[in-house]
Length: 485
Image 1 (cartoon, rainbow, N blue to C red):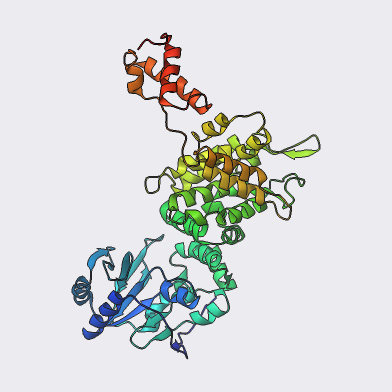
Image 2: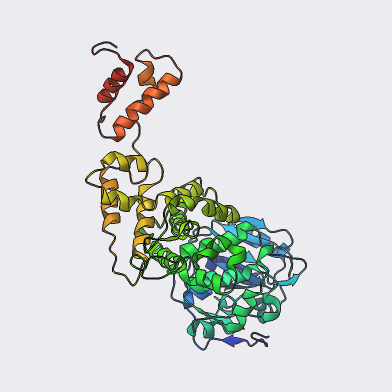
């Protein structure tokens, strides 16, 4: 099996426009003056041709050895070299660039062992452009832009594949050396809504994913969940290519779990989950700058019904899954363990995902019992999970039942209530403090905690709303007569 068997240098017939920051223009000028030929490579070229915002800038410099390249870079920003066998220079502080620019030499890759790390890399500044591009994973990532003349260098037909909306491996002989590329194919196909070349799909399906470390696997899963408009496309590829047995075996049983057609006309739990993650992805816009919470919502949507395979029964003529929220905690924990999900940027993603799974039916239940249940129930729920995130998962769960005409009335009511109660992100701050209890003559010890807890419960019920009322309630609990301090 061969993909793109012979290199063909295809220079676009039209000049390519790629606006570069002024600091990068100055760097390129300095590199050319020193005898180098710098190109913008990879994702920046791809995204520009797709008409998308260019976020990450990667540069490959031909014609200069590392010992000459690094001093030039140091004149244009702070240089941090990463990697052991082969150095990639992260250049920070370039005028007009947010973050760091990755600068590297052309390099040769060869398989030296198992797994993602078992690849020997050797820099070669004299490598021809087409050979340097051969080491890249997909044709859409193997294009180079020459800012000196505004031309696109396309040795492997990446522009053609972009126009055809096709994801294709550059070289079948080397593609399989890095099993991570199979997961990259999944998330790229979903993010850019591309069909996958059949030969490339076959290569991906045969990759030894078990060799990959958890953090690399989840890195691609996170991109799928957060960057794709419809993450379901990538999840479907994981299943179709037989990858779920390694990447997420906890998800396998969902397809074999039926649902009551009256409530779930879409079909089994797997079909429902795919719809839910897509609905959840559409509810993240106002969390665009909050990656940990975005990820929490998407993982909550993905895992919310993992308890159904263990609890689904046919009872009284209906398919029911009683207690699936609690039952979902074990498989969710297993999946989060598998992916190494804990905290992210100091935020407890793991704890919140488990709470969302455990309580994802609560907004609907609270709405159904809204005439009986007071605001205290919502305030108490805010102690267990973030209501605003719960709203998003619950709404996605409701809408993820196409082709039914289900409306998220209950979830919209729930969000309105949590906003009115100011508990969208966290529960109310306790009004009564430990020092207030000590001031009433209580000695340090368990009695202080007992009083604080009791007063806080009254606060959650709305019976205590001011510091004066909190202290009065503490006196009542302690049996201190009015007027005595």
